[in-house]
Length: 95
Image (cartoon, rainbow, N blue to C red; front, side, top):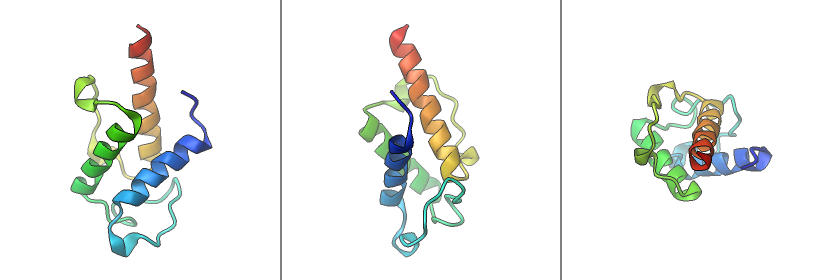
């Protein structure tokens, strides 16, 4: 899978779908804070994980991943972690 601007747009679209109403007008950039600026608490992040699984057809519970939700502070963190997950999945799929 190629990771490009389209991939980042997909992740940003997932984030937009999970953002509570009063935060909908916040511009989403890689530097935007998930909790402070977008109002995504731990349940919001979890909902985002489910959207990610659905969008990319993966079951993260079946993968041996060590993702610390507390480390996902910005949109950029989420994009980078998403890339890492899909890269790992690709590597496992080719093994």
